[in-house]
Length: 300
Image (cartoon, rainbow, N blue to C red):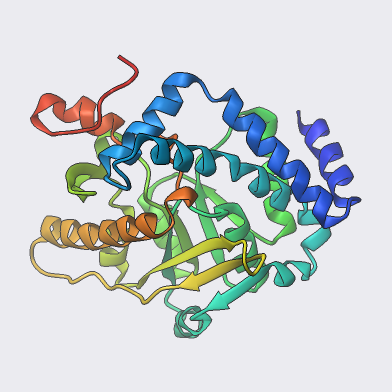
């Protein structure tokens, strides 16, 4: 697989951009066809559950669009050898970049919160290539897939830390790093229970825990592809600081609620961008059973 991906990347980089993304669109359509029916029903059910729409036909359109966009995402990553020396700048626009520059000048580190929306891989690569000291916290992939994606992340000067101890993350922050955390997926039973789309939902509390511990800003950075401009629009949002009181659990819960509100609002703005195929309420359902309302479990 590794050798195939390298050869495929080299082939893609030789093509005109229009053909590159035509291939991406084809890959996206193939991906949707390959999704199992139960997983499609899960995505559609979650869209309806979150009241993005009450029309099942529209929900299916959103679910499909959120899957087919992976074709473009794959092409963007395969183009890294072509864009790594600065050509990526033609692909993006920045809004509120000065917020990152201020955090960098402060030298105390920051937590960059991200969402599985837009091309989060390209986002990390662009930020690292622009000189920000980004360390992305990621899940280790299996075999050749991990080797390939990490080699391509290195092309864009991106450093990766696998999900590890809080001590390692604190050390990185103390050294002035921007710690990239994606917090919108199911964290398992380790999360904190806070509202998300109107329902009590287990949510990753890492950004709030680290933000409180180190008193560093939590800054959402998002990327949305605009078909009108033909560019990925990077937006840096206003920093959030954790209010530190004598009640640690309260501080973490309150901050996580605010972060979830941001994520929910962003998903409502760009529902086709989010990863609806992910079973977001899986552990909430397992951990709390029937005591908490969750989407229907299509796998049972």
